[in-house]
Length: 196
Image (cartoon, rainbow, N blue to C red):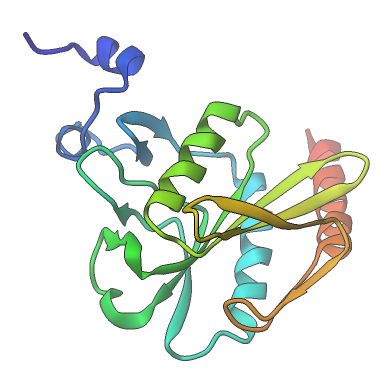
């Protein structure tokens, strides 16, 4: 007996091939059989643009930061993270094999679910992605960056959490000015609210 689409939403029984056959091809992520739609209002793309600028500034030629590209994992998982730094070997493919990712960054949406966060973290660790970043916006601190590094035990360890200026040399020199990002976000948000 085949499961209905409604049953699949409850059981997490989706596969990459099943989603590819959907009419209209919605923007989605597939994590361990769970289908998650990834469409978000334009205002929430602002931090993504700024994060991409920071990742692109000193990126060496053998790597490339990209945003929202599907990653090939297995038949039940095809995540589409907000940002990925990829090795340049197979950039002409879609989806890109997850083993080409050296850093994955996710911007937590206001409606994120802890289950989704845990599922993705386990998936990325299982796939061997060395670095995993989470960018979260909460008040009054503003944007906070949490940096995780894959350890020998196959799990991520939180190595830094900051809402100040973040600098690193992994996987290459990157600086992300979180106070400026927060100030820019607040200014844009006030402008949007004043129009509505």
